[in-house]
Amino acid sequence: MLVMRPAQMADLQDVQRLAADSPVGVTSLPDDVERLRDKIAVSEASFAAEVSFNGEESYFFVLEDSASGRLVGCSGIVASAGFSEPFYSFRNETFVHASRELKIHNKIHVLSLCHDLTGNSLLTSFYVERPLVDTAYAELNSRGRLLFVASHPERFADAMVVEIVGTSDERGDSAFWDAVGRNFFDLSYSEAERLSGLKSRTFLAELMPHYPIYVPLLPDAAQEAMGQVHPRAQITFDILMREGFETDHYIDIFDGGPTLHARISGIRSIAQSRVVPVRVDDAEVGRGGRSYLVANGQLQDFRAIVLELDWVPGKPVSLPAEAVEALGVGEGGSVRLIAV
Figure 1 (cartoon, rainbow, N blue to C red):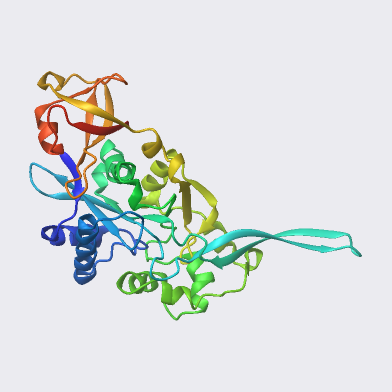
Figure 2: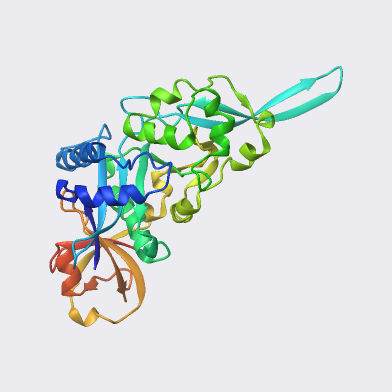
């Protein structure tokens, strides 16, 4: 059984293996043991903290095969994007240029550097092994953290964002970066992303152009890259769009990938998930029905799994003993669930 749970320091070696295979652009999952060690340490402290509002906390989850102990995925949530430094994006805007005398009225697409999204909660660090990409376990790895938010809303902002990795070629070059960022740094896209993962994106962002960039002046390849999704990030994009996230307003300042945004109240797994009492029933094994994400709603002992359930809304949910053990709940306890 695959179980989503908070990361522990003992997971460090396995997490680094996952980070090494993540695509260029996932700066929140750097292939660097010290940065990953810090990431897990901050997460452990965040889960242990008493919190009444969203602050500097960062929560990091792993997807574990309970039979072998091997990690097959990970994901995270930052409680407040840009808590200690601005969270930069390019805002998609339209400027109007008009001349009464010539009777010309033009709308021009521009990109403006901004930190509008600072303070929103941020989904980060998504990775799942490739054989699991088109399975319910990718849903668990992404949406399981939303069930955590639903159970602990006081720890998060009223809105949530996620940066989706943009397109780059097999050499790790990005047409958008080459047309914009590379003019200000003597770095390739992959080098810039690596440096950002090891240090911070903010110090690079602060050297980006602070005046609007007129999109028609960019090369065609750069314009075409805006809002496009890296093939390996498509699964994340698709899952979150089904959750109710929206695009088109902001893009990433490095590769032009879309930045998704949603109000917490409008996210499906948060708004539509239900807390129901548990009955232990091994007859549930193999009964079939519909796939559900099931979470125990706890904090440091948070667990989430995927189960095939024949559940009737308004009734208790019958769980097999194996699932009850994995979730750490018992007869009369409760779980939060949402259909896959």
